[in-house]
Length: 556
Image 1 (cartoon, rainbow, N blue to C red):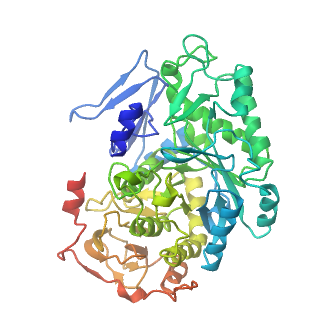
Image 2 (image 1 turned 135 degrees about the vertical axis):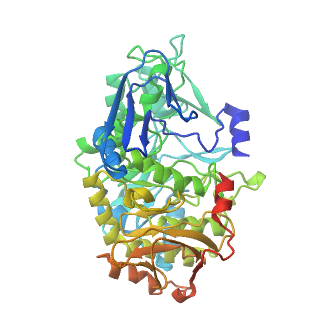
Image 3 (image 1 turned 30 degrees about the vertical axis):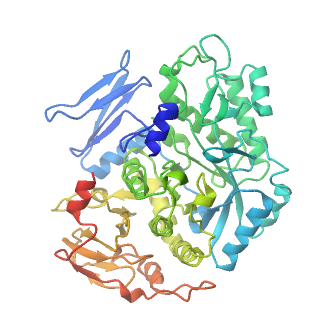
């Protein structure tokens, strides 16, 4: 339904294989990678068993091939070649980032609910800090990147006061300017916006929003926009922001450096990430302020501080639901994206067509996010249609998952540090940790670092699934994180997965075993005395399952 609506309005629909992050690089299981250095449109075709085909619009650039001795070494080589992310600051890895919109009073009210239930949070993401516009797609952010003092009165003082309690406020920005805003008018008067073929401002549409785009190839426009971030966001005291979009440049646009949009389209996300990174570095805030991007191309990993997987639907679908967050997180790690994360509960909502967030989806995606680098929610584009983290029916259980995330902080930070140093991602394809495992390893489970095996529940109403445990050296075993049950490697099991307890296992020889064991202790909330951790059991692979491997393959 989302694809239908997007196609009918803007020819912008997609499929499970479409992406905000198209990059002409591939990694082979034969332990080499190939990269094309050029920004022109390209197609990589792997459909023939005998050869790979690479089509490039206009003249091709340089091709780089590098060979390594293993798949992990190959991925490390890609990371060194393209550049990878810096370490995330501790604050974003230790506690939740909760999303609230609607102004100062509503923000305070929802945060008080979180405190009442003991939700540990170190950040509050108010994407509408610059104001709101009401559209048929729901409440949208006003793309005029200045603090809206009427919408968020006293925000400057709140930022200072909440910082004393270790809570940061995060905002939102993209490279576009709403045509009704004063920043648009200023940029247009200075010639800073992307032009059309007649020399006028190229106006674009996002549902009902009319906007122009800052020409990032114009040095004066680039520096002006960077100063907008430094002055209006960093100097205000924001601890981070979503650096959204970056993939919208029209192919027939005319740019200041003489290129067309067709020639610069792929590079646009890199310029956008670079601008944000420079704003942070020039303000002396790298390692403290975090911005997260969704669009990308070759070089984005060198500038972005965190990847986010885009606007997932509020459902369990493969093409754009919570399942796509699993695949994109693991897949993006193969090309230098050290850190990735997703909107807990998804974003894209169409209430009139029944596409709304359920309690199950919110909690299943939250339990998945526990075993990632960042635990961040989103209210979605139709707030009232979706179950939210602060709703009575869900807050206690959400608080439990946020506390689980906090309990793993030491391990998470250690994984991040090692990943930045090694060039491997924090969320790793199974074969990156077990490249010599004698049996094939599934694509729908992953290693968080080297010690945690995670098999998310990504099908609606599922309460169990198959999990493949790789071989471990010596007499080491896998330990079920919720029950403490030990299991031998080199087997496929049927894992029970009650809500809040996705199949997760740690290596018995892990130096963080005592950290993992903390998740077996019930956590207290205002209305929840804890859960019975002994209820999860592991069965043989012959047991019935609502998520068998055959069904998983059929879904693809």
